[in-house]
Amino acid sequence: MVITYKHYRDTREKYSDYYENNISEIKRSDEDKYWEIIREKEDFFTLWAHQIKTPIAALRALFDTSDSDTSGYKQELFKIENYVEMALNYIRFDTMSGDMVLEEIHIEALVKQLVKKFAPIFIHKHLSVKLENLDIKVLTDEKWFSFVLDQVLSNALKYTNEGQVTIKAVAWDDKNEIIISDTGIGIRQEDIPRLFEKGFTGYNGRFDKKASGLGLYLCKGVCNKLGHEISITSEVGKGTNVIISCKKDSLKKSNLTKM
Image (tube, rainbow, N blue to C red; front, side):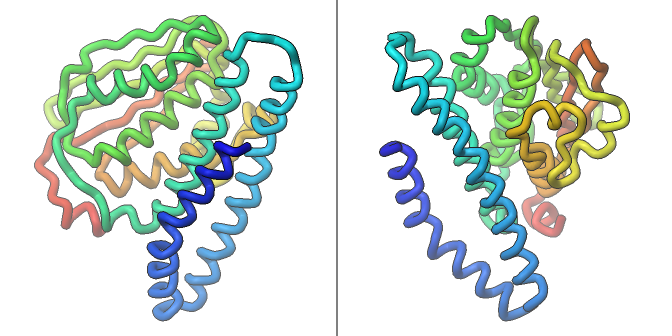
């Protein structure tokens, strides 16, 4: 609890002035848009508050036991960190165009950082990871592209209980594709067209009561602003493929900020 409160306090101090300045500008220009944004933020943080209670309660229960194995504690703390990070990126999303830094990013290095981050989950669930042909570069914003990969990999691990996760790149004449594949429970075909809708959790979400339906929604929005495309194919019982397509054309930040 001390760790969680400190993170909240530091984050609030860091972003409060920035957020208030931006929302004030919107209020002056469009009153209806201002209240729409306020309502959306309130809806999100209501949901997020309920989400964060689950790992906190689980942590409390774990600390009350005499089990000396700390792997369970680490799993729940990891969830808290991810929920907090999603909340912060949701706040920053509306103004992300203003702080994008476009540069050529080495995908293999970025993916290895994320795999290292999720290593405790791979180990805990006895899943293997396979990296293929990732020695490529794409023009993107490292922070936001990392967020997209993070969300996709998190979903792959959440819904995969055996087998492996594969991350590979495929180079085409006009684009590079980064594909994250898993051997998880898969997604029903009728749910796939709505996966990027805000708040949609689908059939799988009915079993995962903590699913918010916001992760893929944010991924789609981020990819749109970066000039990338994201799509999903899946088969129930066999697994899911998430494909992120990055154009090879020379892009300019001025073009992206208009998206």
